[in-house]
Amino acid sequence: MKIIQKNKKAYFDYEVLDEYKAGIILTGPEIKAIRSGNVNLKGAYVSITKGEAFIKNMNISRYKYDSNPDYDPFRMRKLLLK
Image (cartoon, helix red, strand yellow):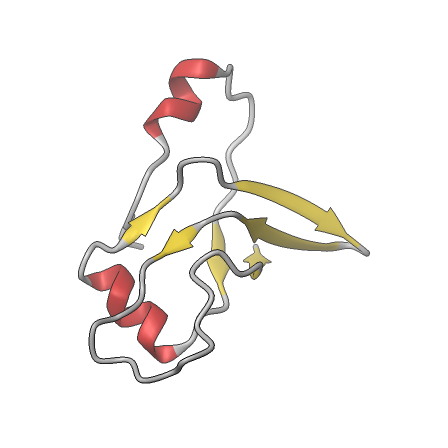
């Protein structure tokens, strides 16, 4: 598994007791944007709602060839925990 982005500031500001590996449900243009390095975890956090994990405030910038006019770079994305 390749690590795309790591939140270094979280490790500096907080004591991390446990780590979990998770996948994220993404759209095609979001995957391409992440592969080109257009992702920022600053201010992102995980929320558990009805037994499901979601990441909030993760910024995935618009992929330059995406034509979707309703793209929200900060949308809530579902995590797939192992």
